[in-house]
Length: 279
Ligand SMILES: NC(=O)c1ccc[n+]([C@@H]2O[C@H](COP(=O)([O-])OP(=O)(O)OC[C@H]3O[C@@H](n4cnc5c(N)ncnc54)[C@H](OP(=O)(O)O)[C@@H]3O)[C@@H](O)[C@H]2O)c1
Image (cartoon, rainbow, N blue to C red; front, top):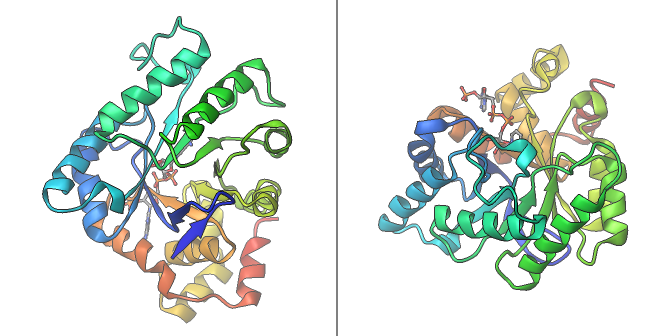
């Protein structure tokens, strides 16, 4: 199944994340695509991601007949604050130039002429949006208008910041990517804005940020009823409430399980219970 944003661009409803894979990135991306993933998330940020190795995997997959157009590729612009000394653009350049250089470097790393989604890794400040955010967003809007990326988005964004962006930007984001805490109603405030605005909400750390939920007796009972794993219940819950979950599993078995989450159906009562389980 796909999710469709307000600009009518669609994304597969489960995405493979490539953070922290280091030298295994190429092999794991190939394995993920062979297992059935069609959406890949990375970032032009060497501290956490090996974008160039994602590109090597894509090249190998292309040789095996997996066409670029059959995949959804998403990467991110990470500001100097989120980089080490290996900044993939001139850190002394103005922000507009930094975004353009980072984007071109991502295209080179990934061996592609366009992206499906280009995401601002994080706003420059915790509350509200400042001049730096608006300059970067304008540069990203320019990339979107040029057709070099089919979507633009923002990550690690607070509800107030997202509301401001939606209100004032020429192009509001088509995707949001946030860490999803069950204790915040699975990021309910931000998800509600996304739903109202036709923005695709991508959730990460669904398992790792919610360890107490994974051992909750009610979740375990639901998993038993479905004959599923707890991780599958969480991913299916996410899908049923309209979220696009990310998984970065390193296990082929877990890749299969995560993809199979779509085959289960939670009841309305179960959805409501999980949504409020940590509140
Ligand atoms: N925008 C941002 O700032 C940001 C920040 C963090 C992450 N992300 C993105 O989100 C992606 C996912 O990151 P994440 O934080 O959600 O965590 P993750 O790195 O994917 O970790 C998921 C954990 O869940 C386990 N797991 C997955 N499927 C499982 C299953 N079926 N059964 C049991 N365990 C399972 C994995 O273990 P196994 O490896 O053993 O399966 C792993 O320990 C990243 O790769 C990245 O692309 C973005």
